[in-house]
Image 1: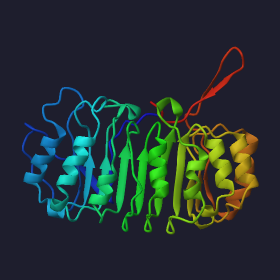
Image 2 (image 1 turned 60 degrees about the horizontal axis):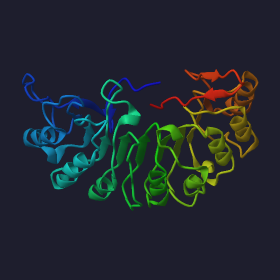
Image 3 (image 1 turned 90 degrees about the horizontal axis):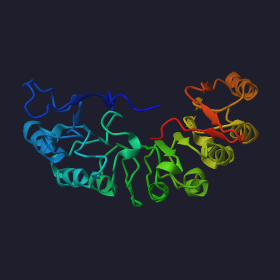
Image 4 (image 1 turned 180 degrees about the vertical axis):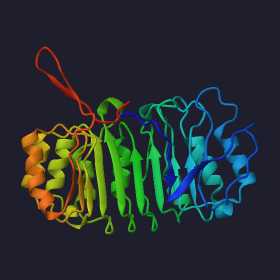
Length: 319
């Protein structure tokens, strides 16, 4: 799977792309009615992202802006997001109503997910204490130090390879309001170097008291994650669990079936998997009678086999 569509909404607001330089003049929506997408071009940009953001700040009442989507910046495959982060941080006093921020809304034609160069995003959380939703796409160079944030309810990191430093930063952070955590862990080929032990603070149940929706997905170690989740105390208070998009085999599913009951869940998402039909049937028989919405669609999961019998399986989103 590749990412072929830009975000359509953020914070419940429809996305609207702020016009680029030289585009035909158009009436702008009310500042608080949309999620503003401010973007440049990855290749041969006529305007740097920081300049586009400056125009945005001069033409829109930023004191009313509630959601902001950062699109492409020039040469994102070679230039990291630190300039974007600095520009946003410098404008924090002009964005008092900002409640949702997404950094790196690029599709494959602009920059493949694992080519997006990110940076340390800690300042975006510390600088916007009223933020309720934060998302980022691209794992290369992505970093986060442990923070305390009273308001953040949703945290998403979409990557083909999530650095262990970011995982540990999330795990060490004090996020008392967080309800929804979504980490695309990815593969070592694209920078994923976290181990299951790095997730232990998230799974232990001693942190994130309001967490109800947990997604640990798109991982080449999905079986190991499933085994850890099977006995994780945090699961008892979840409403939804998402272990999709990764290399989940019968071993991981067996661990889930043999672990703590999952019948309290509203949904369990395992789509894009490498499960045999007998194991899929066992999951259905165990969970669906309890009302658990179960997604077992193998989706585009495919595997290759070498002449020597070596089997290669792939996550949903890598490059």
